[in-house]
Image (tube, rainbow, N blue to C red; front, side, top):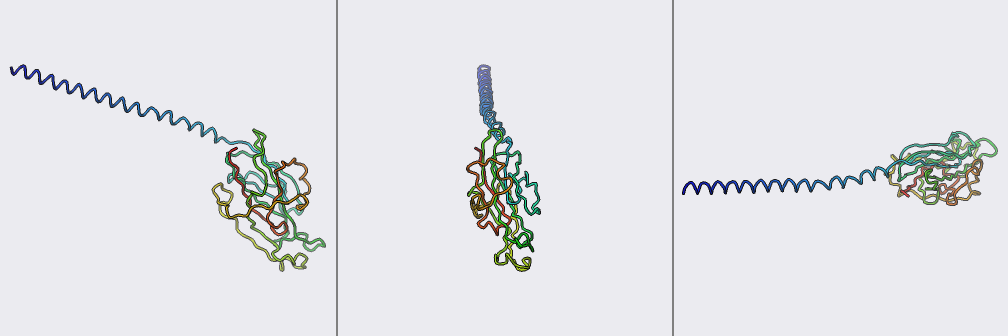
Length: 247
């Protein structure tokens, strides 16, 4: 009888061990099944990377008198005629690569002989100059114009002169003409910069700006407008920004 009981007890122990082994195998299999979807979930990463590939663009710009162009915080080109040139009216075509979305930032300057804001100082035609510029941007792969200057651009004037326009014919404008110079805001060309408080551009006609050499060498899109600050004569240096989303 003792031998029979021992045999039964041994069989019971072996049965428990077998059940335990089966349970462990099932758990391991379940863990493997749960980890499998992670491979599928990672696949969209390649799609995101593909959509972030750089594209090539062409910028066409006419400015009275000078400009520099930044895209996504990087300088990509500027007017080939120095701002120190008294009469510099010319159009420029600049090709660059960038990744959508685009933040286009520009500096535009009207020629001024001194901080008085005047030109031809000491000559019979001593006067305040006037500014203005127009630009359009094309995605070269599609041929589509993806941005033009218009009233939606935001501009921040950092040099204004003369503040007292009656000094225009002064014999000593460098002493009598008042001016204001502001610092460029830190990081203003960056996509993350907040330009919400900057005024929007004022749109002008070709006659108001007095377009000259180079303007007619470009076929301007109907949406490309001549813009400047609120005063063509006294706004001499302006920072500009516009955001272009993925089309």
